[in-house]
Length: 196
Image (cartoon, rainbow, N blue to C red; front, side):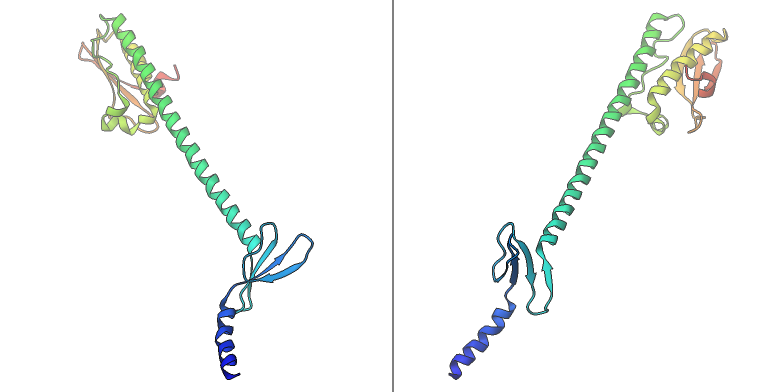
């Protein structure tokens, strides 16, 4: 008898440490068991040691919600990255289009422009000055062309030798420097060029 009691006494703490689950079926019947509840049943885990309980359904719902939030954030981040990539591609293409217009103008007016008067600013090979304003590269290329035409229109510029973004440029006002064969220099601001 003593041996049996001793054996039961040793087993009792092991049983108390085991998880106990309170399962509620569709009919509202509650069942307590040592294994997790079947799928579709309301599940509550009871901690015999502390007397506390954990609603496993709520826990699973919270985990699923957290997973959905993480997936939504990842999808949002991916979308933003794709939009940024697309925006950069459009910026590069617009700059190349404006550069092509510059080269067309030079090619068709060799008496007004030296062959390298407006060399294209290539996005991946920008000087530190131009890189500062790289998000406005299409505007800069267009302004270089317009500034050259403006300098020629003064009749004080025999031929355009070079057209570059000026060191005088600021965030609020880009400046273009036009060097002419007459040794005259023109500084033209974007405000003077307007939105043409």
